[in-house]
Length: 165
Image (cartoon, rainbow, N blue to C red; front, side, top):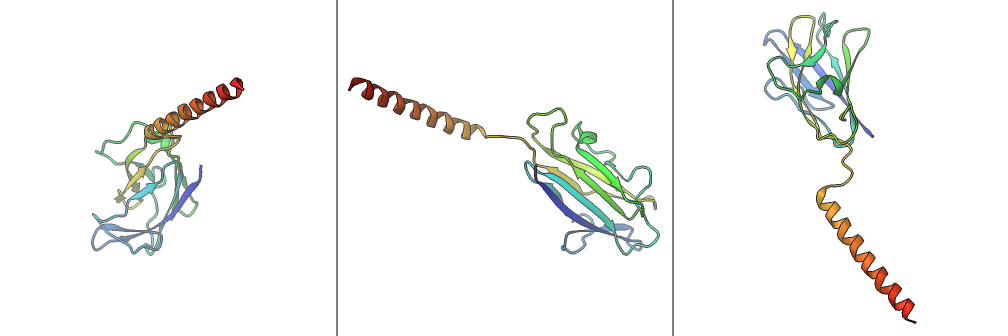
């Protein structure tokens, strides 16, 4: 599966008491306008969260990423994400696998998560998985079935004419 890579900038505003977040080259936004992170169908998401302009604050050393407390998430939260902190504590890479851990079709879903920091604050945007491994839709399957029956009918008629000669 191809992957989608995104760098997310984070800055803490101590006077306001909240985090600002910006995706790629987009400007930083505060709550409630945090940008959503989407993983397209049949892709793996790789999100690199980078703390900028916030001296003395790092990602929480024991649990920097996890399900948002009080929110309902799909049961496979732990199976969807690989979390890789760096040595400095200022950068955190989250790989969103966007797949069914037991194999087969994965319908996707929205995951409410928290980024946790060593100053006791959290940041909680949303990651939306758009699923994977859907080979064809139901309407495509019907169209392929009709095409196959039509080709078979043409082949039978052609064979009959050939045999008759």
